[in-house]
Length: 151
Image (cartoon, rainbow, N blue to C red; front, side):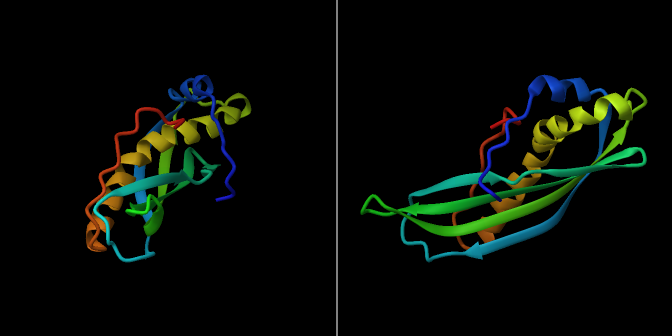
């Protein structure tokens, strides 16, 4: 992740929504790194969305998504200490529908993948984070429901 923030256009993503239909979501990578030993029951977290990569192959839109959550413990000294980092990489595949026109619609796909794609992968990311935190012996972290793909 380069630290760059990419804002996507909801109108453009919406314009592409009738041109592609979700076929599959697959977890293609899962990584957990223990960064410390839990000594506090007070935890916080930060989620980072990696820039999604995508390509059109024949009649399909293939996208790769990466999300990372860093879980921190809040210490009595009012400082935070990184406890665990979880990265999940996911692949989405969309069928391009007859309404899709490669010459005029391809410019919409970046916004579609950045917003709609993120909404599609979020539940899988939440589930993997919850399971992996429990496996690392940290209180299972249930991330909030994502209400907007632009947050």
